[in-house]
Length: 610
Figure 1 (cartoon, helix red, strand yellow):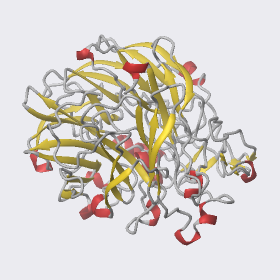
Figure 2 (tube, rainbow, N blue to C red):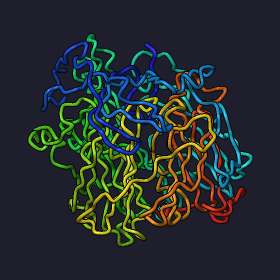
Figure 3 (cartoon, rainbow, N blue to C red):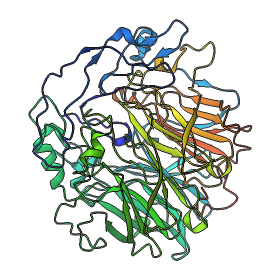
């Protein structure tokens, strides 16, 4: 079967997902359902940890006349949709009408005058994965390096000279391509069996007088559902696929390395740690048997000090998860990293309703039974100020479970201070990213999910402005403006460009240097990089933008749906790197970021201050 990698690593291959009621800017409305029956009924998987708390309430297809382009040139989003992520969703006046020669995808560039493209490095040489990747920066011997990777696919770039970036290492599993089942279980030239480059945090360790990297190791975010023999290829029906996922013997947890240089050969393993709460010794996990739970998701939250926070489900019964190809509802763990070679678990936290048996709390969530929503965290806590520097609060984005603010001042006893439900907006992910860079100065945080469908075939994903100045009573006070193309452009709404449209994330807290007060930079899929001026939280503005073509000469047809997927900002050099399905761009903005430094940084990056 042809396995296709999807954005956000939520799934791999062909899967049918659906959405529920949503509301947001861009005119999202509840649409009429014209086909309220699926082609097959759900069959139970036979696994007690596949949730069947609520009856199957997946909605049917949408009346195509109930959404689309409006007379004023705007786009009216559907609010209730039946989505196939592997397909385009053409609409009158959309990409297939405007760009028939390129398959419905916009080849044009849209840029504000105050954003400069300092360099573009196109093609597969610079593209480890066209849908998703993580980034880190390190400095060795006066040279600056950027890592970009997604599990087995990775690149190491020398970015010291912004206008002359070089690839110094390229890692892949191409040599085992075509292996049936999970190719990560097979050793290749670059990777041992079950090894890969997990989402990483890299910080300077005074104890080791060098960089220490913590890599997340998690179960893939999908069951091998193709093993089922029913039309419903999901965990709810593919019993064989669920069983195969449970039987995998990979590490579920994290690894700790000392970095002695920028290449993989320079990694020195310090610790291998399981997040499975059933392991007798998490620092010496039994790798001959399947481990329970999800492992550690996305980039760990650690500033190089004593305390590290992870997103994880520590056992199989953390499972009240609607998403059709994922098995876990993730909460959080906190680890003592006084010695990075011997981490110690301090506490584990989840919200009521996430664990099997907490049926009443789960049933109270309106998403229960929709077989669509991502329930639980995908990222660790977002922490404005580390505990070691007097910080007290962590912000927990938990998908369909909403936003919680935790008191982290006693890391051995995490405590919820407050909770905020958010307007439902599925499909796509909800409550995924929290930008906390402005919290200490304004009390404001910015919460968003991100889209999964092409051609805006889902509710628009708002970036909510949340006043958390009193952490006991957070409340939504606004939304960042929806990006629109410039006057005179071929399109009047970004939904017409093809691919996905909406926010992903505003970079990572691992960026070198200090974030700018009043400035947020989001990658916005087919709208590229969007620069938001939030100096006055009551009047946020889009102050600049750069939206590149939605594909390049080397972009495979199947990879055009996710034009840009990441932004990583060097605040110490005033450079924003944009990650796309056609390589990487280096952006600057004198008026927004400040004067760019296109050469070696004045000081090596040591520990992030965000």
